[in-house]
Image (tube, rainbow, N blue to C red):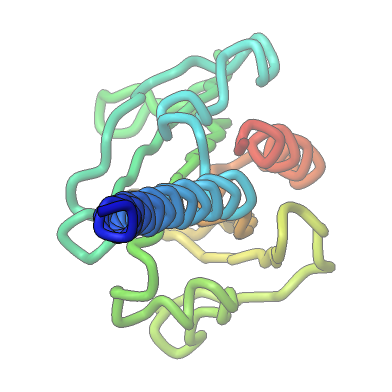
Length: 222
C-alpha cells in the first residue's frame, strides 16, 4: 500500500515537473522573441539616427533671416516634379534681390542688377532611383549639353558629407542688340540621406555668400 502511494506521488511529481518545464520553455521562447524584436527595433532606430533626417524638408530651408536684408522670398514650395523622377520628397525656395537701377526696353523697365538664389532639397529613395550613383557622387554635368555656356569647377567647399561647386558663365543677347555675360554659381552637397543644390544667378553674383548659405543649409540637416 505504501509503495503504491509513493509511486502515485512520483507520477504526480513527474507530471508537475514536465508541466513546469513546458511552461519554462514557452516563457523562455517568448522572452527571447521579445528581446530579439526590441533589439531589432533598436538597431533600426540607431541607423535612423545615424543615416536619416529627423525633420521635414520644409524645416531645412533657408529663412529670410539667413540672407542679407535686401533679399526677398519669392517661393517656398514642395517640388512635385522631382518626386515624379524618383525622389522620395523634394522642396525648394527662391530668393531674389533687385536694384533700383533700371533700363527701359520697348517701354518696359528692366532691372540692370538682379540676383537669384535657389535652394533645392531632395530626399533619396534609398537606391531605387536610376541615377542615385550620379547624385551621390556629385558627377559634374556634361558641358556639351549647355549652349553658349562655359562650366568651370571650383574648389571643393567641403560642406556636408561630400560636396562640389562650379561656375557657369553664359553670354546672353540684349533684345536691342549686343551681349552681356551672366554667371551662375552652383554648390552641391550630400548629408545623411539628403541631396541639396544651391544656385545663385543673375547679373550680380557673390560666391562667398552662396558658400555661407550652403554651410547654413547643411547645419539645418539633422
